[in-house]
Length: 514
Image 1 (cartoon, rainbow, N blue to C red):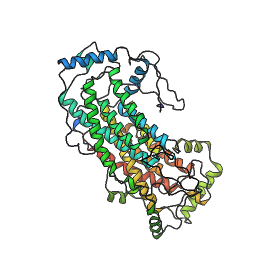
Image 2: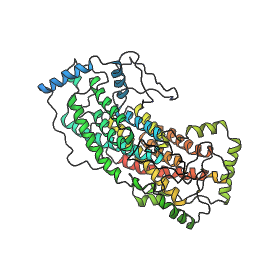
Image 3: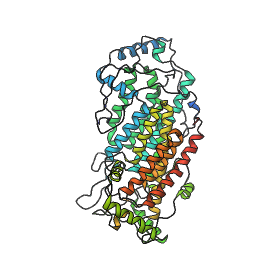
Image 4: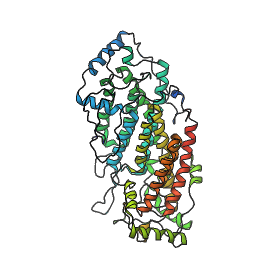
């Protein structure tokens, strides 16, 4: 699988504005990302609060002295492999030089898009469930729907962040200087800062990312391993790290990521698609006064997607808080407010404007896309890259956004199956952006977007108006696509912002200074 952002090197590898970058996919309308010296090295990041307790036994021995014969041998090897890199190696250096967490989140989004395909019905009219034990069989595992993608990105980002916090501790404990500063004849192909190089932050991120993504996409093990190997090698080809830097980083990334995946195995996701619960959910919703419940409009009827995802473990608050965050009930069918909202959709159905159609299409994030969580992940990635974040601050930003996106998904799905409300299609409204197989209230797009915008606005306050406008547009897109009633979207957006406030509070207390 090739990256969307495949890079063609036109001149030389030197980053001093002497390379021209060309994207192969002309549908991606954004600048290519290149290496930079971080605005801050965040030298105190080893003291920042992690999401999980550091695994027992995490330690790194002191590195070889830069005056030792062994280190001299490592330098000699580094010079050998970095002096005349091939064209493909040069391309890899530029690609990975844009940022370790940045690129691995990009890869994760691409995998989500590849696997975001709902199973089709078989000849017996049954929708088979993807099998993790046989991930390449039809239908492929996983079905990377929005909740799955949110959870995947959360575990990926937490593994990257927790591992980098540990890495920063050892970097500033041992303070090993970059190879090109030890020996001026080492050719560094990327900007060199004062950041200590042991352990390699790139190797930390490559290892942590590979552990998580191989667990989340078991049919892509060979691809993920190849990307991790290329990432590690790129640091040698670029003259940025000696082998012992990379080995130490790989060890640390593997160890921390294994700790994160232990949490994933116990977070309740295995029971998220428990279809035996739906009958009881429908009964409970009716007892609460729901007069019309959601019914699949597909033929054959498709079982609801992940009805028990609302029970999955949260990141930034507890279950009691989730109950407090749940919005009140949606307008009941037949009520004046319901009739008003239905009439709005019927009018859009007949008179949709070109601008409404554009917004609905842009935010559709349906089959084959990296879903709303991926959409916001990309927005966050580019904001942090433009701010020239250090690797550890980049990972912190991803973790804050991704954990609030998973929390938003859990809260939204709990609300959906608590109320079990119908969608507009059950009242004759046609949708232009697909047909989700789960209840309508509240809107997932709106909840995800409100949460992400709240976090990003806190991290980048100068861009708060921009992020809030994007969230509002994403929310309204579901009305313009005639897939949600307005109450679904407005309540979801408010709930999402409330969910995001818990990640904001965490970020303010994590010791990072933001």
